[in-house]
Length: 111
Length: 115
Image 1 (spheres, rainbow over the protein chains, first blue to last red):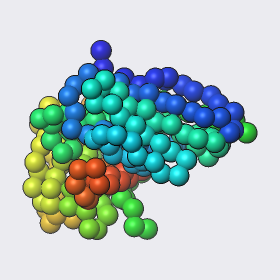
Image 2: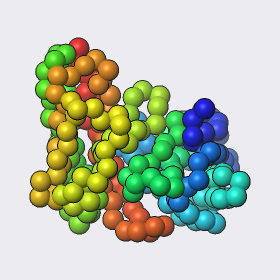
Image 3: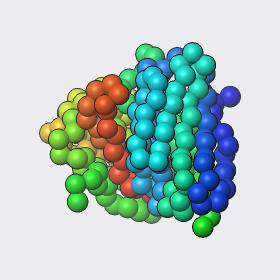
Image 4: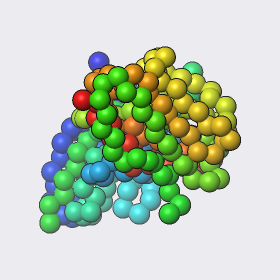
């Protein structure tokens, strides 16, 4: 079993839909990253969370430390949101760089 | 371009050859990371530098792998005696900030194919 599990693995949505991607982890963590990876490999950090909720534009990330769960929401989705979204955690006792990555959720937003 | 730059973008080599990749981080970032990603998987941590000091190496990093960051700026990752299992995308990232304010930036990666 992976230490970081994401669901769904693949998601297809119509433009304008509200999207939720989930991340569950089995280790104690100090912080969690949501990352966006576009075709061709470029990865962008969207959020880093250790508690609560963060919002940036149409993106909202929440984390529940007790339940070991985080969600990434996209409001009013757009085709340019199509990408792989990756959840990654810093485990307790792990180094600054030792992120544990999920396998990603591939999102496709149709016009 | 002020992002993280990696060279080359693609590298094809024969098994047994040595290869070296370069990463130029964003200039004010003191932390630099190397990750490896295979198809359909999330990236895996390889090693991490704070300035010129290599602070952690993954068990994935066998003795055929070595990384340096001699002046705390660019970094190189060398793989000696490449094997077919080394074929992967090698990603470099750099960061600044602490805790929730950390900003992590990735390069576009070097795709290695070992024939």
